[in-house]
Amino acid sequence: MKRNTWQREAVRGALDANDGFVSAQALHSALHASGSPIGLATVYRALADLAVKGDADSLQSPEGESLYRACSTNLHHHHLICRNCGLTVEIEADAVERWAKDVAAKNGFTEAAHVVDVFGLCAACTAKAAASA
Amino acid sequence: MKRNTWQREAVRGALDANDGFVSAQALHSALHASGSPIGLATVYRALADLAVKGDADSLQSPEGESLYRACSTNLHHHHLICRNCGLTVEIEADAVERWAKDVAAKNGFTEAAHVVDVFGLCAACTAKAAASA
DNA sequence: TGTTACTTGAGAAGTGTTCTCGATCACGTG
DNA sequence: CACGTGATCGAGAACACTTCTCAAGTAACA
Image (cartoon, rainbow over all chains, first blue to last red; front, side, top):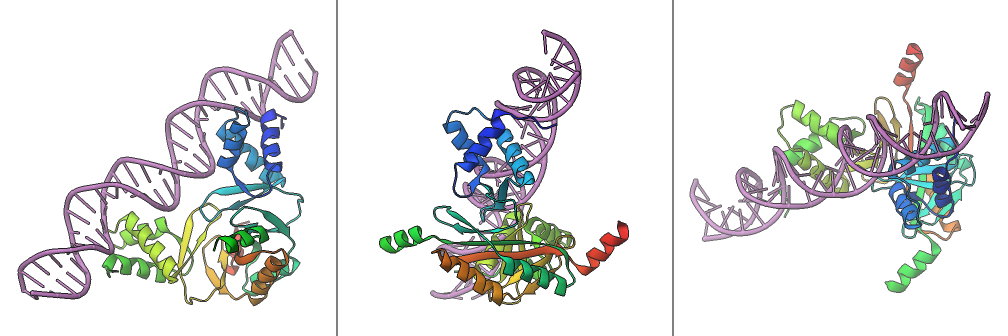
């Protein structure tokens, strides 16, 4: 049986309050900063739960951390992520889906899953970068 | 000045001898097994060097390890990876390249890089899985 | 209210990677 | 070939992130 605890709600809330991907550690810090004495282990557990239920998306940052994000849809989709400010845009990729399945099939692969994420600089950060350059 | 040491050659050789992606740890074990008393730190250093020079490809496994692979081409490309045996097929993805650039541009993003990898079960592993199921 | 078993939290443990630092050794030179 | 210099090595310590452990706490249901 699953129980509802304020801790779980807090994690979900903190995730919702965030636009981009956040690391478990950052989330934990944020929660602490806002007064929740929640434990790190609990944050990890809650995030894992959310990810499994499809309420959150997770991906590995290039630095090796696990990043999480509240997802507006449970459907399979991908992300366009600003590597500077973390802004994330959800993108559809029917074409890529088809391509991935295709390529896998052509090579005899089954049960194809794929990792497709696009990193870049969002408009704002591009402008900022141009200004400072 | 860069020096040529047998250690670096050994790492490159071990990488070349491998068809799929291998973790730094695995590479270190393999080298030790074949008699090289090479240090783990050195393996990491050599791999990082190779990756920077474009002689090796690196990616994060879903488990968070860094995986490396000798690359037959320095050109940008993607991989189809068997999650069971590690077999890797290099794939071209012009369509995906275009799509990524397109999507990024449409959302005001610049300097788009992307992570596109397909994991699955290769034909052999699929057969094995079916047999054991 | 009482029972039950899921959940929590602090810290230990585990894993993968990077850093430290004295010893070593490749490379250019005399 | 011997030498000097500084890049490189290796063993282990240090780190960062994540998971596990287990006693104490508590939500859910009767």
